[in-house]
Length: 300
View 1 (cartoon, rainbow, N blue to C red):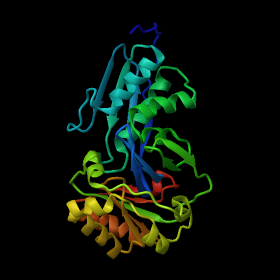
View 2: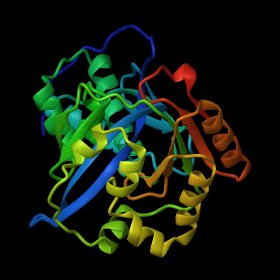
View 3: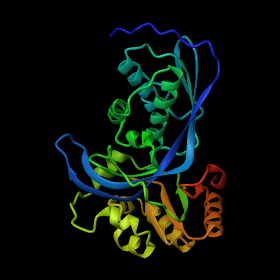
């Protein structure tokens, strides 16, 4: 394809975007689609645990990552996002892009998707372009089902379709503390979908259950459909959920297809103690409130 000529800025300033993670409040796998994906229903909630994507001017394009285990070629969603944006704009990609990785990947926290969204944001700034939200959302959806959510201005949304159709929940406030724990094992998303049994459900609507902010009701009705098959395959994850509940969580669940789990706590000290104990167990963990600044949240 042909690219238009672009005059790169003379400034050497480094631009940075934070790539926040997410958890799933309930996840219903409804049906398998003709395109091979599944229709789902879930409430996505961003948390302040995040990576950082840095971009600086350069005449060519290069991508690096702080985690040596992650690929830095087209297998990385950041690289695919950069080339996808350049193709969309009919421009040649340029700049030094660096991913500082803090959030575990392959854990059901949307880490790679969030990195891709942050790449779109930071390169739009670096390249001096402004895309309409609809165009950017279409590009994001082509990269992955969760990517549009991380461009979404609201920190919480109902996601339907394959996860890319978003419905705002602007009046929802999550009043509790979260502890997110990530074991060393990874659960491949494709494997999780092979294990899960889709099933459509009548009422109650998922949003109604989430909005109740009632942990007792959540225990009965706020279900992640991946839990049963994933726990059967990886019983250590079920044991980890039980440990979160024993540590004082009033609700616990798998995030996405796993392997991350989260516990909902009503008391900050109990949440902090659980996160510290998780770290002593060799687990990566984060605790805090989703809608507060990162200064009140801690990754361990």
